[in-house]
Image 1 (cartoon, rainbow, N blue to C red):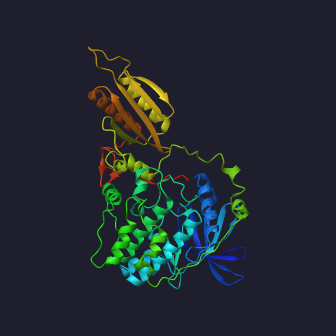
Image 2: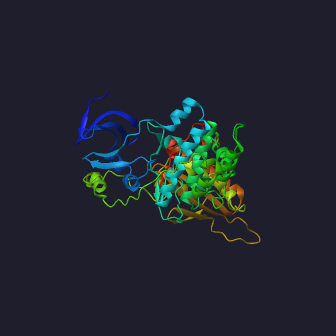
Image 3: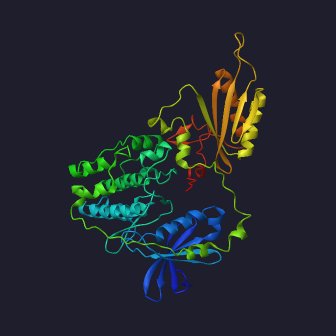
Length: 458
C-alpha cells in the first residue's frame, strides 16, 4: 500500500486501476467510514489531447444517471493539476475476470447479469443516453454479485430517434451499421453489444472474433456466428433476434424484457429520476488551466478520422459495399504516409509536375489533368484527383482516383508519388498491402499502432 493522501474528507490509498490519463484510487470517506473509488485525471494531459469536452461529457452524463446497476458519481473535485471524480466503490471486480476464471457462466447467473444489463441500458436509453462501448471490460460486480455498468467515456446524449455518426467502441462488440460509415441509432447499436455480451457469458467466448479484421467485419456485417451445442433453443431464439444485421428489425430492450427466457426469475431494477442541474463542480474542476496550456494544445483538424473509417477506406476492407452499390468505373488507390498534411500536398504536386500535369487545389483535394483535349487523333487526356485525409498530425492517407486517361500514366503517377512519400517516411499502400488485416509498410513492418487508434469526435 502506498502513502495515504488526503483530499478533503477523503483519504486516498492504493491504486486499483490505471489508464492513459487517469488512475483509480481506493479511498475512504472519513466522515462515514465508507470505501469509495476516486478517478484521478491529469488535467494538463487531457487538455493537451483536446479531450476536455469528452471527459466533461462523461461526468455530466453519469451525473444524470441514478440506477442500481450503474456506477454512481458522488462529486467532482478539482485542483490546479488534477480532476478527482468520486464514485461508489464496486468491490467484486470485473465480469471479464470472473469469466476468465470460470470459463463460462451457468445459465442462471448469466441470465441475472444480462437482466441487470438490459435494465441499466433501457434506463439509459429512456434518458437519451447511449453507452456505445458496452463490453465485459466495462461491467463490474459488487460484493453481492450485482452488475454495475461503468465507463461512459464514449457515451452520447441524444433525443430518441436522432441518428449518431461517430463509429466508436470495441471491434468485436460493434453493430454492423457502424461499419457502414452512416448515421445509426444508438439504442439499436447498444442492443447488439448486449447480445455479444450474453453470448460471451453463456459460451465463454465471443460470437464474432477473428485475427483478420476483414474476416471479423464480414462476420459482423452478415451476423455469421455459430452457437455451441449446449445453447438451448430459447437462448438461440433470443440471440438470433438480437443479431439481426438490419437495425430496424432488431429486437429492442422492451421486447427483450418480454422474451420468455429473459423473463424467468426476473426482478426489475428501479431507476430514479435524476434531474442534475448543478454542474458547477464540473466547470470548476476544469477551470484555471485553459489559459496556461492554450499555446501548447495542438489544434485538431476536422479531417481527422477514426479507426473504423480508416479500415473502411481500404478497398479490400471497404464494407460499405454490403450496404450500397459501388462505382466500378472509377479506379481508386490509397496510400498511407507518415508525412504532415502540408508535406503530403507538396509531394503530390511534385509527382504531378514530373508528369507535366496541371494542378488545381481546393481545400483537401487536388485535381490534375494533362490540359489536352480529346480528338480523333489524340486520346492522351488525363484526369486525376487526390484527396488528403489526416489520420493524425504526422499520418495521412492519400486517396487517388482516375476518371479519364491511360492506365499506364496512372500507374506511373502512383509509383512516383509512392517513392516521394517514402523519402521522408515509411509508406503503406493501404489497398494493396494488408497482412492479417493489419496495414503494413513495404518492408513488411506494421504501420504505427497510433494510426489505428480511434480519433473519435462527439
